[in-house]
Amino acid sequence: MLIFYSSYNHSYAALLAAALHLGWLPSTRPRPEEILALADFARGRVEDFGVPFLKGQDQEGNLVFIVGEGPARHLVERALMSTLILGGTPRSEIHVVRLDPFLGAYSMYGYWLTRLSLASELGRMLAAHFISIAWPRRVSLVSQVQSY
Image (cartoon, rainbow, N blue to C red):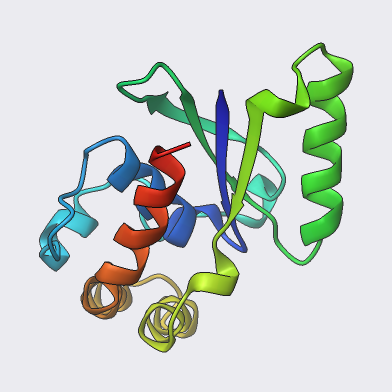
């Protein structure tokens, strides 16, 4: 199966969900330092919108990707699905997990802090702190995806 964690900017919610899925981050609330240790955290670029990034393979053999949708959410998902299906991947083997609807206020606050501080180290640290507060919601979602 191909699992795509997607969010507005792939370097936040999608990256953290993939890191949790692949066991790079604990299911208990991570320390902000653990989040900051992810090389791509809060480092997304506009040019990366719509580009899937392979992050690894899980214990079941599923390939785990992240993708940033930017403002073209529906277009990105449709293009991704169409390309994979035309390439021969059965629809049943493609799972796109949209994370933005599941983000709480703390996660969104953390994201906007880094945007306002132009991704400075202080902004990244504050974002990691607020995201770690909202961790249980993310764990619940990723657990559901892993059970497919």
